[in-house]
Length: 167
Image 1 (cartoon, rainbow, N blue to C red):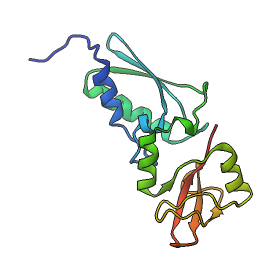
Image 2 (cartoon, rainbow, N blue to C red; image 1 turned 30 degrees about the horizontal axis):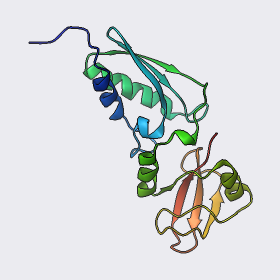
Image 3 (cartoon, one colour; image 1 turned 90 degrees about the horizontal axis):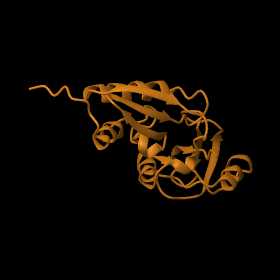
Image 4 (tube, rainbow, N blue to C red; image 1 turned 30 degrees about the vertical axis):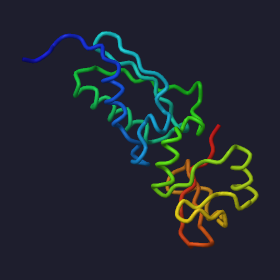
């Protein structure tokens, strides 16, 4: 028997959303990344406020589509609103998300002032996710995506992305 009754199970909706990962960093769920601002259910429609990591981020369209498809599987319509206020910041990345970034080989964001010292002044404070050394140097202000910078460890010689601090 197929259940055609309206759904109101927010935990089931959040579970479906949590299965969606960032297409540029597939180890991070959209919750780990902190781009989901709000989720509400009205009847059979889920209203989601999605925060881009930066204006024009190409991953947002893919994330919105992936969320809509996941919710359609559990019989919900989706209304996604891309919001710019409040702006997303790297403070929204969860502790679990930061751990997953490092395990994946991406250095986690520093504080705003430390980020500037590392990116603009060349201060050796970005920790290599491979060996843990802070004897690292900036190769490029932009890494594999605009929200990351490319660094190289001077000890293990491995290149790695550093997720820039955004406030």
